[in-house]
Image (cartoon, rainbow, N blue to C red; front, side, top):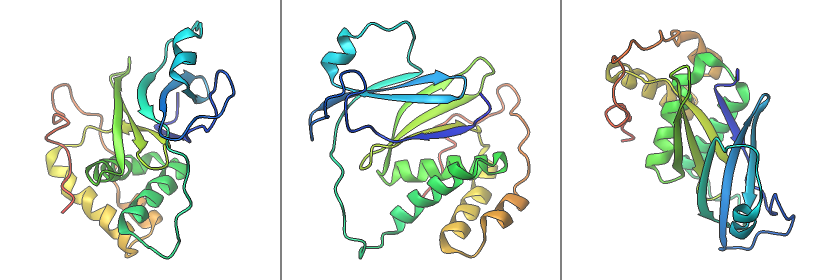
Length: 198
């Protein structure tokens, strides 16, 4: 698959039976990898258990369905700006921004906006991390670029510049060096490579 990241919105009806999902009721969510991307399934737990499948999920997790709530637009929140920036970057689909996308996702995870649902190491040794927006239920499949500790501060500065509006996406993409593929054993463990949000 050529895409390094992907976004899938949460469904509001069971993918299997077609009946509406119930607010605050259990739901099983799954991603199926296809040649063109990922298909997302949101199902009643009973439907997921009884449905016969001839495919293995890329990722599957249990959750609680939260019905969408319209919030007043008069409450600008910096964290939501970061979530919107992540969506813009994913829509841009620019490999030069892979470090920024990853650091932004980790920052949103630390801010309790995203939750990591899964991490998959693929045959080519790349890692795809599956995040879910706690409130909206959207799923993000994001490439983990295995940043070295010494590179994280620079990427954090790029994220801050984008959020503050002091730099454009084009400026940040232009200054982002193409990261060399990490050598075996050279990448920092994920816990060490997590950026600070302060």
